[in-house]
Each structure stands twice: as structure tokens, then as C-alpha cells.
Length: 272
Image 1: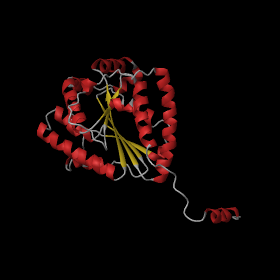
Image 2: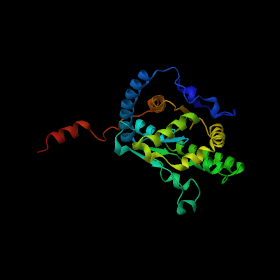
Image 3: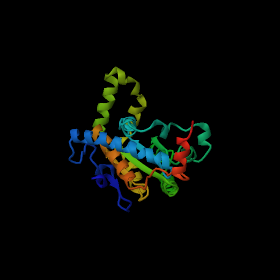
Image 4: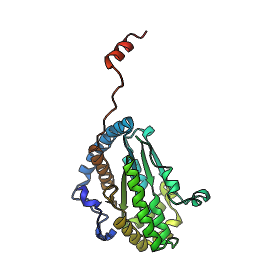
């Protein structure tokens, strides 16, 4: 089932229109929620081994249109995780210092240490999405950056960082519903920004740029997953299943004690 949402590295042109934002893969809400709870618990178990062994690091990239549910996905993914083992970074407009460096400079500083999990709420892909939509990056430079990003992700993977990339796919109608909800419900007013309305005007341009990203930046070592996100419960289930299934295939083990265990036991037992 997971493979149905994974972009395999190929020369085939991928379009966001190839995927239905309300797809649930034939799974009902009750079963998906029950399975999500199990996946959260299993992820917690695997994270303990990840943190202890320090053989790998996890980088989870979340991208999507406004209202696609990136914050909600973070809450679901990390619900049972030990807080000492993860960090979340939301990339905003670059600072003056960041702009004085290459666009990946600020990104590399935030990648995870061995044993850690880092979630990017938006990421370096913004430099081939929003900048391209608004004409700051032309097609030629975007293609050059695709190659740089592929190389960057390959470098991370070869040094032990597992890269998960999730495009949280919603429909335009669903976004409208979410925007209305943010205005109508007082406890969600703080989430509303007029800039969301301005960016919505570029919906088609964003879909074209996302399609290019999916086509050119999905590789064997760092594939993209298109996560239908009109149903939040399916978004949570699918993202966690991808992560847990991948971690299950790694050789995660707790490190063994260095030295003679029996001698150490005897020594501790004899302590006053």
C-alpha cells in the first residue's frame, strides 16, 4: 500500500493531479486510527534504539500548501517520542545573514545529529517552490538546484541520515474550508493570515512547481511520498507507517556494555 504513494526515481513526469487528496486506500477511519496508535507506540520503541545506538539520524521533511496540516502531522508523528531525542525547525523567510550564504547553508546547520530526529516544517524545497512561483528563481536555476538538492540528500544518506519527504496533498476546496474555519472559530483565528489568501491566487503555479519537485527530486535514497491529506486521520496513518516500516528494516540494536558484565555486576553488588 505504501508504495502506491511513493514516487520511484524515474524519467516519468509526475503531476500532483495524478494523486487524489481524499484517497484513503480503502482503509476506514476507525481501523486507521487504531493502527495509528500502534504505530506511534512502535515508533517510540524504535526511537529508543535509534537514540541509544547513534548509528543513524532521521530527517523528516514536511511540505504542502497552506492548511495542508504540517503542524498537525508533527503532533501525530512525535506524539509518543522522547522529547530529548527530537527537534522541529520551521523555516521562515531567510535572515540577512542567511541570505549572505548559499541557500543550503542554514539547512545543513539544522540537520540531525546521530541518534536524533529532526522535522523540517517546510524546508530547502522552498527555494525551488515559493521563490520560483514569485519569479526569484527561473527555470534554469531551478533545474540546477534540483541537482544540488539530489546531491545534498545523497550526501546526508551516505553519512547515516535517513531522509523522509512527505508532500501533504490537499484539494483547493479543502483549503477553502480550512481558511473559513480559521475565521469562524475564535480559537483558530490566530492561524489565519492574509498572506495565505495571496498565495492561494498562485495555486496552479504551486502545483506545477510541486510536480517538478516530485519528478526531479525523488530518488532511491530519498524518495518523495505524496500523502493524501484531506482526511487528517489518513495523513497521520500513512506518514507513520512509512517511517515505522523503514525503521523496521534497519539494524537498530541497543549498544552492549563494554567490559566483563559479570565483573561489573559483582562490583555494583558490592557497593556500600
